[in-house]
Image 1 (cartoon, one colour):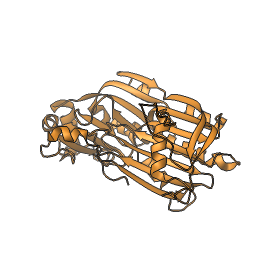
Image 2: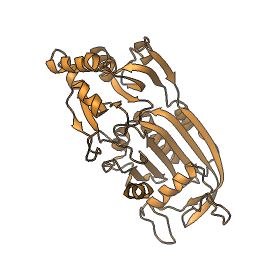
Image 3: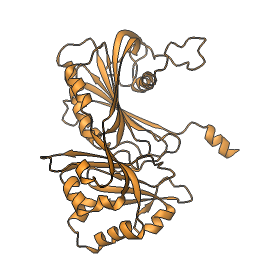
Image 4: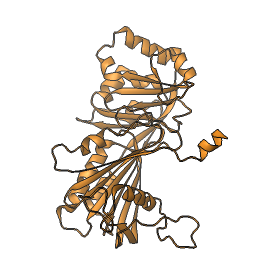
Length: 363
């Protein structure tokens, strides 16, 4: 009975809201974007807009590429060649594909050179590497986390520590995964992922882009200075967050009495806009590309617009071993970790960060 009751309960979630201005010296917007490493969906909504500008459209179409490598041995990510070619010469990202973080072994490579392994108990013991129990294991520890600093190892390639790690992953317990890979190089491109992993099954992929114009959309009234909202004057951050989720899921917001699917309606006060442009990009999307998109959305208000605000929403992979920075991420009932910017025409912004039950508080 206790198990059934637990399944029926709404899982814990956490929403953190803050406001600032993009021109403020202590604004955290860039830091928050750059430390949310593994992103699979980016959506932006522009009220009172029916056609995307050339600059925004070009950015959206240039969100790739990324790569899919099938059955890639894990030890390939710790070789001196890989570290010197990709990790040291830019920001390299990797994430195991089609693995369930609460059931399977999963791996993530972060742009700071940290290789994070989330392993089940048997695999962890077989590797012989030192790690720590997952903080979401419960009473019976079934998952372990191993962190390998590739940048540190690259300066000590003759050390016994590096030799042992190589032996553990190449001979003692060889592991293979399907990987998503992406690389943001900081200098002249001397190599490519396609060339480097040519002996494996590798595919270059582009994110999928969906664009639509929403007609007669009922939007909440917002005031940049009032994050909590004011009765009969403006809506608050949490109300907007729920409304955005409904819009992205194409939920009918009319709340008609004969509707048995949803009784949700737009928070009040609200206004109806003749049209709104919604764009969604899905794939393996780098924080660097998202930051450029965020900057371009800020420039949207360089010329007078009817829209008082626009939004940019980013969702992370549900089965990534980390959420922000190196914070351990778990799935539990949803696996959500996401953030949303509300960008106002005076360059004030609201930042909303949400995580599920098995996550630390967002930074």
